[in-house]
Length: 194
Ligand SMILES: C[S@@+](CC[C@H](N)C(=O)[O-])C[C@H]1O[C@@H](n2cnc3c(N)ncnc32)[C@H](O)[C@@H]1O
Image (tube, rainbow, N blue to C red; front, side, top):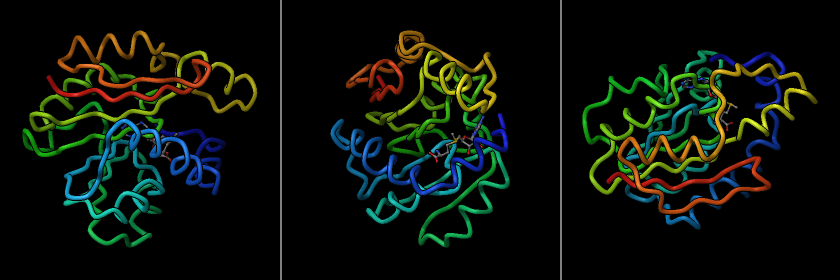
């Protein structure tokens, strides 16, 4: 789902890049992510903040996928060497061949995706054996607080508890390797393809 204007504007601010670097990517690295030499897919890449950090660490390839043309235009404008940005939805990865990635990364986007359950099926197909999903995402409780305070306007159908999130990943062929959460608001997960 496209972002509201308020959320879109908030996502362009410097705090977002700082938070990705200092919290989300740092946690993924603690969970074992080592970017160099990997084929990486980032779903919901937004304006390319994470892309700028990831491409600096010499992946074999970096692909950023997002549903909003406005976000992709900003991301492409960064002219990141080796980065490829494509339009599409995280729940439909059919444009990518089987086994084309080593890791799929989610920096806070699946709470926008009504078909987040299908995302796990799609990842299972596009990941190589031994591949992983690294997800940093927000719980239903967190989004209710955000929307009460900031009126960003999320769709209820896309929201999940962390229990529901993990259960769906496990049911759809992934083992939980690491998980942690800050006060039940933002959760971090590493799921490996079984
Ligand atoms: C909260 S923003 C986060 C953007 C970026 N990951 C970041 O951390 O700055 C959520 C992003 O997900 C994108 N998005 C929403 N629904 C999507 C979908 N079904 N598939 C792919 N991207 C989607 C939005 O366009 C937006 O760029």
